[in-house]
Image (cartoon, rainbow, N blue to C red; front, side, top):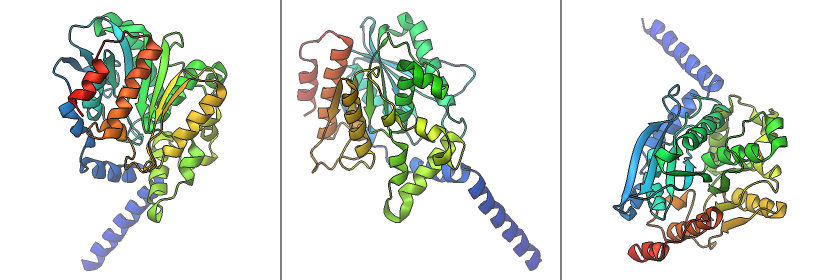
Length: 342
């Protein structure tokens, strides 16, 4: 009996090891378990949310996909407003729109309709499924603009972290016909409706992401895991799509005005700075948040409004959004928000 039990245990161990090498699922489960036990820094933003924000939650933009839902935040009583559609991050394999809610509510208080989008994470769905879901979300929002309080002619797409990669690639496919034809990606948004892009703490250079090495190679393991889950291939660097996904190499003058933020303690920070440089060289209007090198801020610092860097970035973002959308400046909104939450 002891021998039989040992054989079974050895067989199960071998099967587990084989599964670990043949599928990203065991690694993704580990990442999700770790994430669920982490504190949510966005919760510190909740005290900054005004009382006069209306929220409509868990609206459906694609009934065929359970994850395809969105939340709408608007100042109470306002008419159709310039609109920001936000794609959350989470390393392609995790994250959810609810974690961005307090931040998006604060952003909406400055005179915008703000929409937090959900999508199917990997490996439940493999790239480019998420890009197609984003296209369906934008189409739904435009078609139901009157009901949602959206000005469909003044749209801004925003995202963070891995979501920023998905969004930047979607914007490229929407504004550059040659890139869309090369990649086979759909036009997510009509360029005539798109006024700008907001890219927070994102990843835009696959070569640089694979070159990063952290203590004991943990970051390298993380990158390989999430890209394997997202793309469906463990050897993505040898895949033709690898070059297509290196956003910084393909931006042109057709890319919309962009707001780019990152932080000194963010391992992806150099990619944001490189993207800003490439966009400027292409002739694109860029508002880049450059923090002091002594700042303790790190990855996705933007969403913790208890952080002075995040509050300053929010005020800069509001100014950018008003500029690119031509939004009416409501006297005292930005200064009042800053004074109320020093």
